[in-house]
Each structure stands twice: as C-alpha cells, then as structure tokens.
Image (cartoon, rainbow, N blue to C red; front, side, top):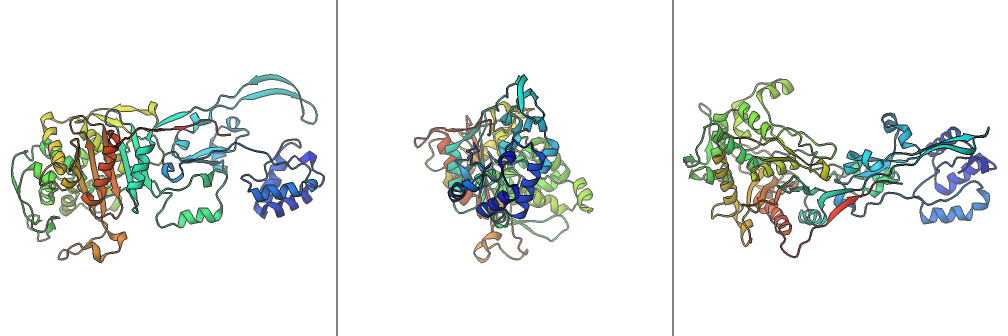
Length: 527
C-alpha cells in the first residue's frame, strides 16, 4: 500500500482486514509501519497470498486505490524434511534480531537465517547492501543521485552433503526417530547429517501460522529438535574402543592377556551385581574378543581400575564432552563425567559403581551423533583428527591424538573389524556378502532401568521405553572413505537395527549399486 495514493486510509484498511482476514494485531502493526514510512514508500500488508486472496483483491480493486499485488522472490526449500536440519530456513527479522544486526546492511531486507546453514553462514549468504546518496525536495522525492554504491550479492555455498546418501539414511530409519551422521575420514567432510523426523522449512519463510507452529511444538516426536548435533544420548558400548585404547596406553591391559568374563561383575566388598548383556557370560576373552563380543564385564573391571578421572581426561582429549566445531548452530557438548563435575553440578560425591557403568558408556555419559562420527573418524585415521564440516572452507584438521605406542591402534581396529567379520562378532551378519572389509561397533543405550533380579524384556515395555540402538563404523578397513554413526531411538538392538543402516550407507558411498554422488548448493541473495 502507498499512503499518498489512498483516498480514505481507515476505510481501505477495514476492507483489507475483511478480504485478507487481518486481526487487530496485524492492523496495528501496519498502521505503525505506515506512520514510520514516507507517504510515497510502499508498505507491506501481507505476504504469501493465496489464489483466493489474490482473486478477492482483484475483485475489490476499484475500492482499493493505492493497493497493489506484487510478486516477490522468496526462499523455497525443495527437499523439505530431508534437509531441514542441515540447510535450516530463513524467516522475517524479529525485534530481537533488529537489535543485534547492522540495520544499514539490512535496509529493505525482510529475511534472515534462523537455523542451520542459513543461520551459521548468514553474513556470507546475505551479502552487503548498496546505497545511494541523493538530493530530495521538501516532500522527500529524489531530485538527483549524488553518490551510489552497488550492492554485493551473497555467496553461493556448495555443501558437502551428498543428497543421495542423505535420502538413503533418512529412508533407512524407517518408522524410527533417530540420527545418522556420515563423514569422509580423509578430510572431515559431512556426507550425510540426518535428524528424523524433520519438518517442512517452507512453513517458516513467510511466517508460520499459529496452528502449524503449535502442531510442531506439540508433536511428541519433536521434529524441530536436531537429533544429530543437539540431542545427546548415552553412547553405550560404542566407546569400548576408547576404553581399550586407554587401557593399553595406561598399561592396565595387554592385547593378548586373557580375562575371565562371567555373567556379572561385583566391586570388592560389595554385593551388587553389574550384569553382562550375555546371561551366561563370555568365559575367557582377550581384548579382541572383548571388543568384538562387546563384553561388559571386561570393561566394568577395566573402568574400575582406571578410575573416572582418567576416563574423563582420556575421553575429553579424544573429543567427547566437547563440541566438534561443526559449522552448524546449537551443537551440544555432550558429557564425560568426573568427580569435580558431580560435586559442582549435583553437590554429591562420586561412587565407585558410577565408574563401573561409565566403562560401558552408561550412567551420566552423553554424546551427540556428530561426536560419535568424529570419534570413529579419528579411530579410522589412527589418531589423525578433522573437524566435521558442511561448507568446504570450514574444513580444518585438528592436532592429532597421540598415544604412547602407535602399535596399540592395531588391536583396537582389529577388534572393530571382528565385530562384523568374524564368527563371534555382535554384528557379524552385517558384514556378510560385503565386497569390502569394514570395521564397526554396536551399542545399546538404556532408556528404562530394571531391578537387579529382573531381565530386560522389550516385549513387555512400551516402545518409548525400548533401548536406543547404536552403531559406529568405517569402510573400507584398510583405506577408509566413509565413517558412520547411527542412533535409532528405541530401536532396541544396535546389531539388528542400527548396523544395517550403516551397511547401506557404506555400500552406497563406496560406489556399489550404481550410486553417484550429488551435492547441494545454497544460493546467496534471498530476495
């Protein structure tokens, strides 16, 4: 609407309110913007008009002088749910955002990045506003241009995300919620980053309706929550490789030294039984079988002898409990507990039993999917570390993780290989028929606790109380080109639910089944 062309402003606004279903709040906002603008400047009444609204405005046009329907370029997200937690979305600039941005650079701009790449790279995607210094008359009309600086368009950013891998991972989760992160171990590129369920970011561009927003907020599946980088989960047995590596480095274990793993573990002078996942225990095992068979009792004992503070120091140095630095907003730290943490946060002492369960990734320990993917990448690279990245120039290698004896990498990686390529590994079925060798580790994150004298029975529990299923792995074993972390919420078994998803991604990324890579481009300049 252009105020100087309107005959009767209040009558015009009243008719527009009827035709466009504008409430009192919207009308008050329009009146304020009209007062703040010059009489010949156009003021937006409503965006995202429906065909019916456009037809109604055409019908009433004789009674609406000064009101025009104009087309406007706007962001469109063709992949909707699939990339909602990676690309994110733009939306109208709100009052809080106006306080922190450079108003001169956002003059005549309606949109700003809210989440995902759109937010993280807002400055580069937005570009720089131009300006004109002009001479005007008493009414504010331009007489001549004195100086002009053309605008600088925003950049086009090519993402590392492989669209076909992304779609494969999202589809492979099936009816489950969860997260999948795949990286290229050679440089840290994020090949897939899935958080399911997603949402349609197009709903937010021109202002989401109250009904649609409430539906997203009240959805028990929490589609707005980024499960790949913001959600934290107990990592479960996926950290047993780090426990083994720390044990070797600290001289607490030897690769070939055998340990008797019965059905449970007890602390000295305590009666509480910390049970193994295998009801009858595993018998005599070395480090290789402890990893491949995921022997809880082996790692209970190792954790107790290592102590929580050494676990904390080693795991933190490896990258757990700290942000990876991925170029997306709202990344969580996760948690590797320590005596000081519990004393400062909970005001309680640390108990030996809490150390025992930390050795199998339970208790207070929490990690994100992207942390587990980075951890797996570092293992695959024998200590060489990369920060996960989505836009290429954010790529950066990190200082390597140094161990006292580099020969200690081999028994850890052998154990991971035997998880899928042996007669005794927990995910041996996943490696069957693969034309390449892989390495991996299954995990289960407990959601529901059972009494000591009871056994976990998923069939008797609601699905929301089922264990989370996890799997981390990389392939090929000798020359890694993909590392994967899969978390399936309430999926039960890491070997049965999460590992097959990782196998599908490995098959695809390594070029099997006619697969070709397809990357995503996010274009700068939004209007």
